[in-house]
Length: 199
Image (cartoon, rainbow, N blue to C red):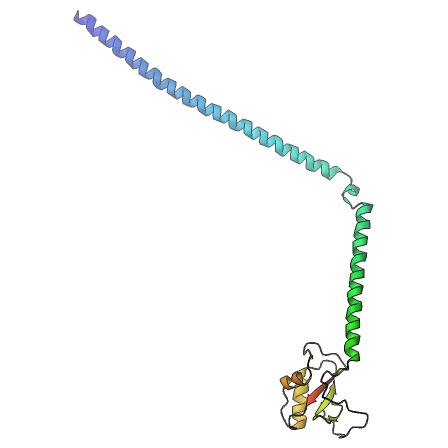
């Protein structure tokens, strides 16, 4: 009887062991099946991406193989562009006309902006002319100087300071010539150089 019980016990133990092994094996099989399924889905997604890329490449090749004339502007496009250019040119001409009119107004208003200064006549009251190139002494205590090529206000001030032996500053010249832009010195424009010694 003991032998029978012993063999029954061994048989039950072996069956339990086999069941445990089967469960572990089944779990491993399920995991492998899941991984295989993931790989199949990833491969399908990659196949879709490759198909999309292939289609894009084919589209680009088709565009490159089309005749070059199709990528150019049409006659209507060129006509519209010509009209826009013409319109811009007309606006620019209108702006230029306005600028010329304003310049003419300024010229008619007198070349010398300082109204209190008197333009010297052909015969100067005082013929003393500084070596800086002034046109002569003015009754309003100063000199008119016609600008020359490459003149700067500092060079003119320095030349008059040396000639008159009395320092003239750029600030004094600018104060005597309202509206004068030291960066735009048109040749021939007469500027007033105040005489600092005269009060």
